[in-house]
Image 1 (cartoon, rainbow, N blue to C red):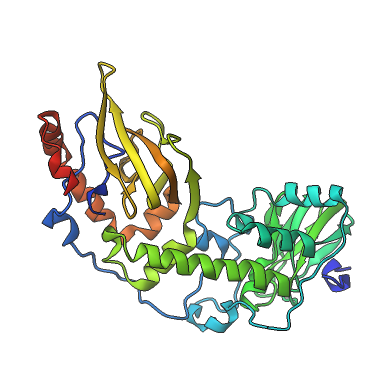
Image 2: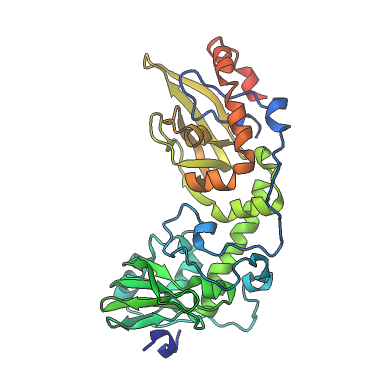
Length: 374
């Protein structure tokens, strides 16, 4: 029995000064070697390209979807129409509100708290998601969704476990993944109007929270579109990214996540392992470094459009400086895997830039730090 079938409700001076080693300081802004370099791009842009899994969209998020070896559209990635990604424009849409107790709302909030799909929703959107979700209880052995079926719901696991099976060319289904509480599934079919890519079976009695197709598309996809537009505009102003094609900046925009820091709050700490790349969206940041004698040195600050954190990712080195918010600070972050994959065309520029750090360090030690403020 399929529970889905039975459900009715549904910058100029910002080049890496934060990862300086004891002999590393950033190259002065405006270096002809830094911004004039262009890297050839082998990929062919297409206005119809869309990622086929969350791992492509959010490479550093804890993806709850398997890398499903689906056959439909494989090798025809441009065949997914742009319209299928467009949020619903139905002016007659009425918000779905399923009555819930306070206890149920708390359970939903706990279930979706760490789900990447909900991270960037505003308060109203978050409330709309919780309002629209409906509780579904399933029994051990029950199929929640079936491969090839029509997708009507997106599911978040509150309790229980599930196995994911994929059948290739009508062969015996193969176990490819499993889900536990906090996991989610079912979004791809709703995002792309595609058949279900896998069969998901409950391996224990379980409780799911289901979000109907229309609400999912209106809230989550409109939020994704809004986030993409906001970040694309911001990324177009980041000097190091000017060599990228628009579609490449679009993929970066999809993978970025905003974080806020209050005045004097630590963003990165000297000596820590680096796992993220940062772009300043708004506000200012202070840069300091403690030398071997325990003396703290301050470097030129960072502003909107500046970036930091790349050397720790490129060279697997500990963070070499401290970065603190100067007033309220908003940054966009990109994890290590996404950084390497999505910023490939500019990685060589970033690496080449690091070759000049030792010379500039000597200048800084001699008091010639004004060049860093160009």
